[in-house]
Length: 161
Image (cartoon, rainbow, N blue to C red; front, side):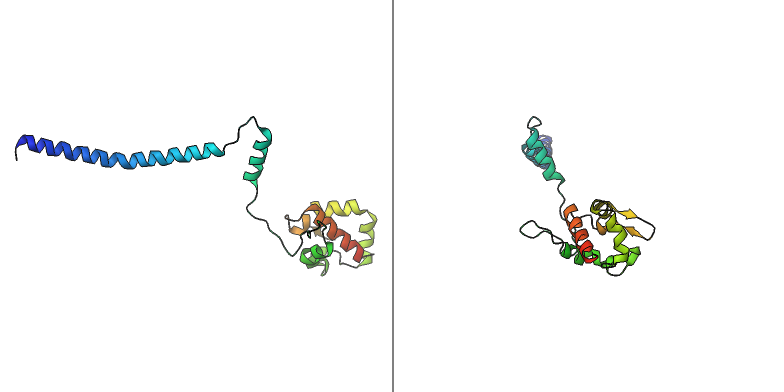
């Protein structure tokens, strides 16, 4: 093989190697470009505050919820305090665990009821530590709505009158 043919073969091999190396780089660059363009198409214009707020709310929405028992409103939107109580609250209020006043115990509930429903709601929703025990916020289930907790308190009051 002559020197000229050898140079030609070496140059050809070099060019093939260069093209072979550039193809994956170009493919990666193309994919990055597509990713960036895809992100930009879902970006909300900062001038449209309502759309921006909706987009932020959608992005921050939890993937799932934790629910103990069947403490969810029925189709009419009415919360069943008995279901909330049976699904969560009775664990302590039926047994007196952690110093919880037992459901139906008029002596234990009388002074609490006399403080007013707003106080009972506040303690049940936000939690409370008293002389005889502790009430965790929302009975230890932060997935409960305030209305569900209030309905359970109403149910407990009804059992204790």
